[in-house]
Image (tube, rainbow, N blue to C red):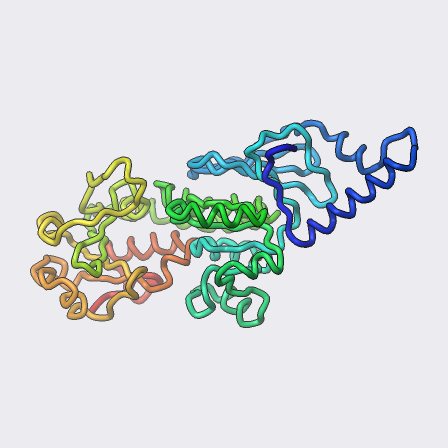
Length: 385
């Protein structure tokens, strides 16, 4: 087991100390037969694979199943592997050095990737998250707010609580790759670090399908299948509807006056296409950046999007706007846009980013906007007046 990254919370440290003491005592007893603990550890010499999770859209993770309830979860962009060891089962011998060991049940998870909380909520697994990377007032997920209000989930702050209480696993978003020192610090405390890459998925339902990954992590695969099926049913309903071909510009005005838009390979342009529309920047791509967004000069945005049929302002960063005038105050040149003049300007709700299991509903909203249907039915978009 040399080199393996093994989970050791405070509870697990004590357990292993007791096991080692017991093994030492038995070894000194002079008995010819090996101890029961050593038999358990040596009898499981290899993992026997029984199958893999079937995925429809997701391309950035895999889940493999093995005899006796073991599971191997792999995040493909960074090739990180995590072996879930069932409660009461031994850690298999002969594993590769890069495999992180997670001992079930996971009950003290540290969640920094806020877009994943909605998945845990849909699985009924919020109680497995002990530490939050967000303060209570920054959560739009009601179950997270309630858990923090009750003291069942606490703000991790500067990470000292992770050590004092014991943390099973830290789930980060990909921004952590810009802070390798944080990863090193967590790992120095024997806390495995997992990066979720749902934002890398090009198909909107690939992003949603990560609920299956976390379903496997928490032992709630059946719940995950149900939650995912609900979103796929919405997609099938919308796809059977009208294809308008109307154009949408999805954007955000940065604090330094640039316009942030989505690359054409991002899931938002794909969502617009599935809804029956067309993303105005169809061939916008900055290959190699690893980002889903691009910043452009106002003049370039004007040239590309002034004739878009619909504008959608992304509120996930600055809290959004409530009127067209507020939007024009951010970028005066918008007043000349076709969508502004025709009253086709929308804004996302503030909670859209955290509502990762609501992509199907956002798809419905975009279809409603594109078809001039009843906007009173909108959930995550609203018309600016």
